[in-house]
Length: 332
Image 1: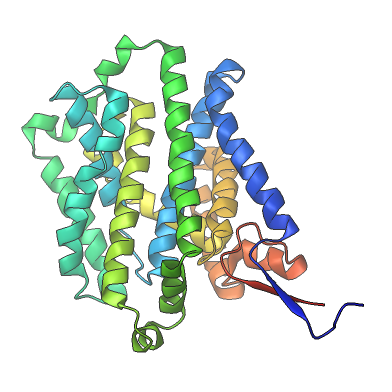
Image 2 (image 1 turned 180 degrees about the vertical axis):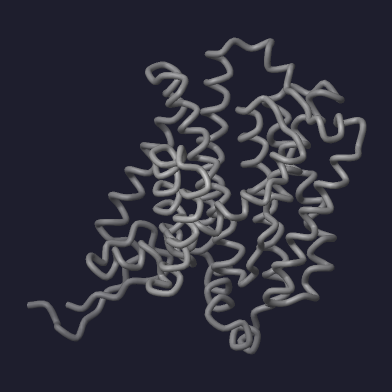
């Protein structure tokens, strides 16, 4: 007979094994889309993948690092412009330039955090917005990148449409593996325990030996790099970038909506929120400003009535985790 006082510790459940397996299959299926899907559906997959990656980075920043940013468009624009500059001005192959484009967001994020770390709460959020606006104004006045007129990725013309689709889908699959998969592995490590402790109570975590300042710097840098990579891939698919599109404040609004509605502080939240936002945009985006007002009100209602987001409501009905990062104790 099984001892009722005996307990076992698991790191996975049946639901997590199914979810991780399905997720890997979906990600691995993305590069095959050019051989069976239409160009429109491929564009949808690229856009949705970028939304998930950007939201996951914002979730890591705000949900675990405790740093609410309203200026992540700074790194989206930097990643996009780094790609266009490397290709147009230095002649780097576009697909090779994508991984190199993360260098500029990292170089800007490091000194920027040294200034922003002196701010807290709403002042930090305002500081991130100011940083993004400063970068937008600087870019708008640099003649080498055509100032406010923007840049076009003419070098992509040497590839056929089919070759471009293969390259983009491969990049998006890699992006999701790095941002979602990488965050999952990070949160399951010892550093993830420190991040979770810091999220719950930064003072208590610091008293237990967690270097809160170093952890927040690392999270800010990781979020900048991941966001910059997503920005480079997104604008590579668009074939054009300008200061108003790259540093558009609407990017932060998208992040906040996706994470708050999906569920902040959980890996599953940004995925749920990104799917909701993406399909809602396709169905109701034609209504313009009225549609944006509804999204804003929905975010407000969820923040007040369901702080854990849609994922929190789902786990109350069925506790089936997709990406468990802790330990699960079962008796018997």
